[in-house]
Every structure is written in structure tokens, then in C-alpha cells.
Length: 196
Image (cartoon, rainbow, N blue to C red; front, top):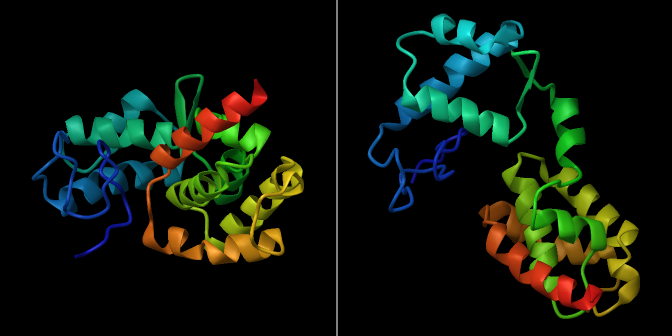
């Protein structure tokens, strides 16, 4: 099945298998990608007021464009200040997404894993970094740093001999592009109980 670089703005699918209740089920993938490309091409040229963006695209601004723009904002690829939209540079984006700010990932990142949720927590961290578009080497570096800095590694409970060995053993999570949310929510419940 073909894979696409841009996710569906509603269900985040990157292939033709949308969620059952997806607003864009049945929308041809070239249309989905065109909506993103229209927006990104304009913002790559220069920061633009949102109203001006509507007129600058090739064709008619529609619900697909509106949803693609909202997805780019939610995924922190596009920022908005003083009613002007700007595409983040690759470096800004990597820096911004290195520390998750939304739940349940925020709890995992801040407090680290605890015994009883290690598998779910590490799975969620790797899957989340893959979802936001970091390369494997960036993901690996961030997860190893998180294991050490959060105190998760020093709490013990891992079979592997080092954080590097643990993350390398989970590379399949990154390569398969698994979702992060279910595992993150399960890990957060255990971390919250542990915190008391």
C-alpha cells in the first residue's frame, strides 16, 4: 500500500486506510497532498497573514485546506504571531518537539518511566518522536537522554544493559510507525499512581 508524506488532516492516516469516522475518507490522496503543498509552498516563500494565504493558493480554499492548516498548527510545523503564519525551520521544529507539552506525553517526559510501565513508556516516546517527524538518530538520542534525565533508567527494572541497548531493541516501533497515544495513556496512569 502506498505511503504518503503528509498525514490526513483529520485522522493522521498516511495511506488510504482512514479511520471509520474520518471527514476525508474517500478523498483522493493527490488532493490531500495538494492542500498541504499549497500552504507549505506559500509559507516557504515568506510569512503570510492567514487571510492572504487563502488567496495565494492554487485553486479554491476549501475545508481540506482549512484542516491541513489546522493540522500544521497543531503539529507545531506552523506558528502564528500577530496574525502572521510562519513555517518553522527544521531546527526550530526539532527543538520545539523535543520536549512534549501535551498530555499524556508531558507526564511521561517530565517524570520518566517507573517499573510497571517501562515497555509502554519507551514505546510511546519512540512512537511520538516518529510521529512528529524526527529521524531515527534524533529519536534515539532524545529517548536515551529522556531515560537518563528523567531518572527512569536509575529507577531500574530494565532487562537491557544500557539505555542505548534498550532503545535499539525498540527500533521496530519507529520503523513500523505505531501510534503512541494508547501506550502513553497506559504509562501515564501508572506514573500518576506512583507519584501518589
